Length: 168
Image (cartoon, rainbow, N blue to C red; front, top):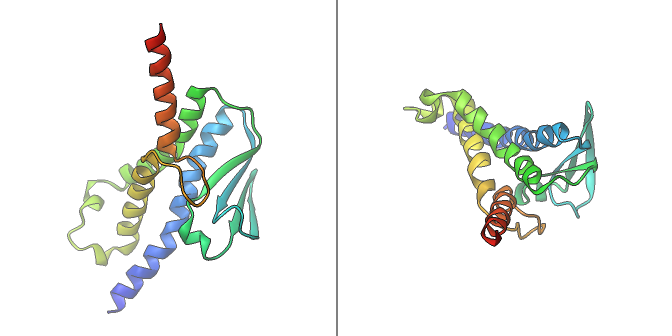
């Protein structure tokens, strides 16, 4: 019984660090593209911001306790040059790529543990890194915020390039 409670607590505790890693992937690519003043948002952007954490040049804003669990995290830059379509696709791919690297770093033995409850941290990091790699690549508009998923941004750029190519 105790191992299940510990597993559940670790499961909840590892969600946000992996979500922040995902957003840091976007921010790293944006930073390399010249954008400055990165902000990571956890929770619904229209909810009251109840905490702001500054980590170096990055700011993490926590909005509404309930919406932390119901709204995908997001990022923005206060000083942003609009990237080219290809740059926007690269920036969108940065988050899933950061989580894919975490997943890969965990190694094949962690991906299919014979006893997942004996190593809850490892199991939860594998789960959340895989979830934060795959789910954002589904091309949708998030209903809570109206924001485009990473997959929708990438897919839109690919379709735009294919249309331009077909017009030639």
